[in-house]
Amino acid sequence: MKKYLPHILLSIYLIEAIVAGINPYSRSVWFAENIPIILLVLFIVILYKRGVRFSNTAYILMFILPFWHTIGGHYTFERVPFDFFNNLFGYSRNMFDRIGHFTVGFYALPIIEYLVSRGLVAKRAIAVTYAIFAIAFVAVFYEWTEWWYAELYGGESGLAFLGSQGDIWDAQKDMLLDTLGAVAISIFYLISKKK
Image (cartoon, rainbow, N blue to C red; front, top):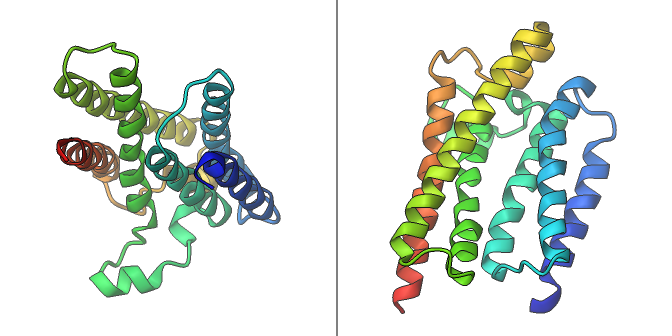
């Protein structure tokens, strides 16, 4: 089972992507939300085919973002049925998007594993620092992409992809959550390696 976990996760993602691609709320938003995720999954598959392997924990954590994002792309993040969570914590805004941003930070673990396993850094602390900064850079780049898309396409499609839901600080909060996810996973990594 452990040996085939990446294959199982990929199969689950492919089934989900096909099902979520059927009659999404907005086809243009579906494309905009899913193209980066499809490219990400393709990149992971290429790495796997080239012999770059990560721990099963890293594969499980890497699976969460494509799974989450594909659901968000189907409904648009603002419309995902997530009321139980929003009501539980008293949010008036749909927080499905924010949790998705936190899972972006989970990609810090494979970055750390790669740097350490290949001997590219002298100390784990350097790998952790690099991974956190890499995730923060990706967060900034993605927020720029959302801004560019919203400016280019405008209208309902642009607003749905931007996903700010009226929050003027949405981009900053999203970048913060991406980075906090990386910090949390980095702490998890450092604690787990002490055992």
